[in-house]
Length: 474
Length: 101
Image 1 (cartoon, each protein chain N blue to C red):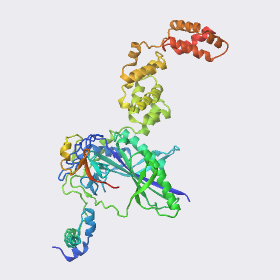
Image 2: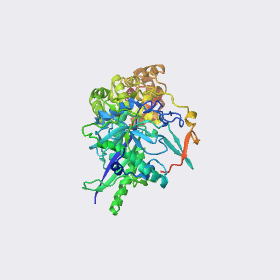
Image 3: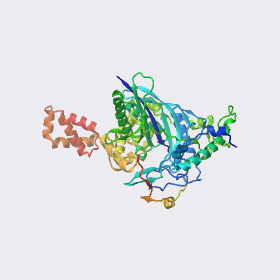
Image 4: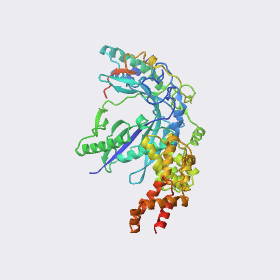
């Protein structure tokens, strides 16, 4: 029998705000434990939360980018449960009136086909603290408590691990574009719970689902789903029932393990948060925010192909990151060749950044300076090897390409007279190679070109050297 | 104040409510709290007699909305002050009984 799977995700995204959602403590990652805390995020009795306007705006912007309906009336609720990393014994979240409803994200499957993954809702809530485990006790750090999170809930529309991965990657791309979240997985900016079930192909009702909690890498989600769906199918094939339970992915062992079964259903006793007032959004307000939205990745790819005449592949690489796409467009506007700008950024700049674990924002070379370097190559003032050398200097200390070339005397020698002298020297110094070439060994010319380049300290115009050698040896 | 009818319809599971609140109650306490809690819930339940068919539910009693704070960092508590009430601390963290997932 064939089985089909249904996967739904609950993605928790850390919103890019300076301060926490209900207090003025900073959201900076990596501070010593319990140094970014105050009476509000430590849950002191009587401390009053105050809603961070930026958290609301960023969530609404996300909703607009994902095609959601923005709820004109939304409110906060208390979700009651006990856990040591949550000092108030309730989490402030949204229950029945979230900020955004519906919407969807179109994914591209590995075979290139498209599929719409529907969203159920997006709501805002506060993050909890972080716990660490010692031998006989646990330690709690509340720096993360109160960090603004947006929870994006999908319909169970994904059919396999690849689609779930494509959804997460597409979501990350859009959220980074919109400046909604840094989406830094190492810092826990994006975590998700994965619900999955299997059913015989054609059966209308969904199978019993299990939940994988707190996955914090995309690779983990993919690996866990491959295993979990195979496990569920094997169980059903052997006539066993799937138990509704929470499972944990053991990355090292490559298996999922049961954590707790839901025989005791959670009773969160949601009720309206009395300390926070409802959020009422007018269409005028929503429209104002919508004006600040950037072009989405898909639209940008299409426009870059159209406006700059670069290949689809290039547009895909450059547009995957908004900052890289901005850098490319600025370079292309200053330069003479958009394709050359694309080549330089894709091969040289991005490779260099990856090697040094830097982002495009940290590059010392401005787009105008990179365009200046490219233009020197296009004008044949310098050859490619020299350009790479100049690039290294610019990368290390910034600066203007033309000035570096001038100061270091790197300009390509295109003066036939000067090169002719070097060509003569190379011919005189290598009689055997010259004889080989004259005897029909074409490859020997390359060696001679190399010798002349060496004598010119890399500055000779290689095309000219080639021509002169051929003429003299004819 | 409370009619028998209200009490009868307000049957609640005291042990379950105590469990949700992480309270340990003795049998005597359960027996004593059962009628008290039912009386309280029964009293509030009188609201069910009101006809609210035409009314919008509301989360707040006051007609106010959109109270926001600008996204600005403000000083919080010094670490030492934050930890002052911790029964146990280690490496800057609050120590709690070992959490078992």
